[in-house]
Image 1 (spheres, helix red, strand yellow):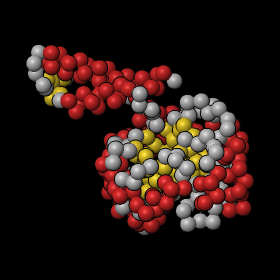
Image 2 (cartoon, rainbow, N blue to C red):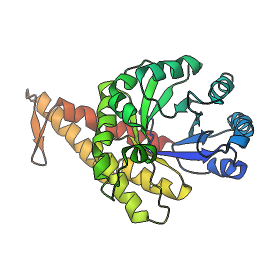
Image 3 (cartoon, rainbow, N blue to C red):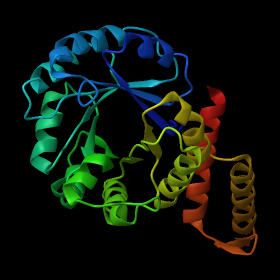
Length: 278
């Protein structure tokens, strides 16, 4: 069964109230953050709070930890804290090369690593990073990348499209997941929806989020709609009927149907079933 990862919510690990609330939210995954959301003086306390929070029941929510960057003072201790914890994976910021990815995996205590691609070097090395065994997802970090590029993206994110597409292509080439970056304007619900739709059109599996109010939009956009489920069921049935009659291909709603379309339809139905089963 395909595990849904439509909505991935970042939470500051030092914010006890937010962590308690997060266990009641409908996000598919939660990332407790030790990096940008935590001031240097609070790093150790946040790490301890994150480890303690991982002992709680998070229900259907996949719980991950975002550690500090590999070259920081706190990174090794962050990784070490994961060893006897219940975290399902580790999110590693600013992974710029396959060598960085190898270091992250070696420190991860056999936890899956989600590598953040948020620098020009990271974008150019995305395929090599994705190919490192133990890396199971690429996460777009567009805020840092925008700053490094000196870009001025508008709602269409035009200056970032090469990077976004590269991340998805690299992830798919290694058969791992890809997650879109955060949308930072909490007062622009329409903008969030449009960006999520764009992200799904690129092929991202889900979207990283910075506020609980963004969860429903990500779940709606990246989850199979009733119309998509019905279409997938009809497509599979049409192809099965064609095969039964000795034909390898058929049409559905005027479009050619081949095995690759059936495979995608089954993946969509598996995701829908996993969401329903929760």
